Length: 85
Length: 85
Length: 143
Length: 143
Image (cartoon, rainbow over all chains, first blue to last red; front, side, top):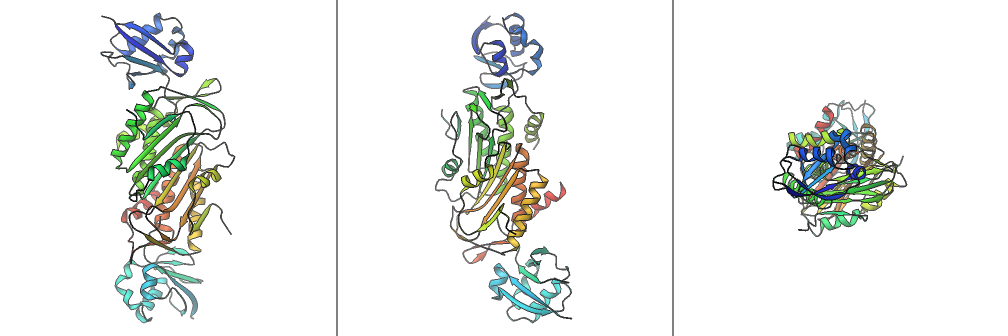
């Protein structure tokens, strides 16, 4: 069963995809699988494939690992390593 | 040969002796020996004998150990452990 | 829920005002430690993840207060376009004695650097994460 | 020789003014760390050893700038009668990155506590030295 997820992007993930925010229906079990689907199938995301290892993610506004489950998730964000402070 | 030394006291060494500053002629080789002489012979200093282990010293404005030589010294200070900051 | 102990904002902050606010009329504060991060050499644009940023800083502040037994703490982080010399971030901690306040500021800065979702852009290039920052954060988990 | 990087004074200090003075027009400062010591709970009288105090703080500041490769540093310490909530001491350090500034403030405070000739009196009793302060100073010699 597919669920609807809000996807956000920041920094060069945003500038390279040109998609700061969108909604997607997905059946990906993990956030890593979701990213693979986006890189493989979504327009403008292919160019990020070579930098996949640099991409980080958050599920519902908490930093997550790529093997984290998307069960009950509402919002997923993809972005580069954090550089604040 | 006796040399002339300026003696300064601070905090409870000052309040207990009532002598913030005085000059003394001494032939003591070390600052520890000088303190022993003061405790033994100088009026108002006897009361400090019981607290000798708590007393600290400086020679010419540098923290010193009690076995430090008084050679070429001009100014010696006695005081309790430092409590600034 | 708004946490008055943190702020994510475009506008500059007044360090003295923040110190006075933290101190208030309290007389149990013996130590106040602070860190100010400043834009160095080149202009920056700072982007962040609204919502997650506030939650992260709020949790970090509460955790630090608890871990270091602080009297209080405050975190302010700016975003948007900043010029060299501009203030970026302020972290304040108050405690009875000095070690907890100093350590807590160190801890909050280390964790903020790798956990609060901010990204810096210098000109056209996004700044890379420093490996030292990642390692510094990990050190605290071993204590 | 007067060292403008340190001050031993009766009057209060303005933290913001001191920060701005240290920053000046420099744009190479990425980090500014500070510590403020404040009178806690009861009034204090602080006595010091004029001459030796200034020399000690001046040497401590210069040593810290050298050891931690600071851009600059400042130490202000007050003496005389102080009330709860009054500022006692200010230590500031600036550097390119944050760790040296934070560590240098910690280092200067630890050393100031056991090496700068100040004595505190609360009411009629002279404050005792804390063994933690002595140990903290010794730690830096082992680095």
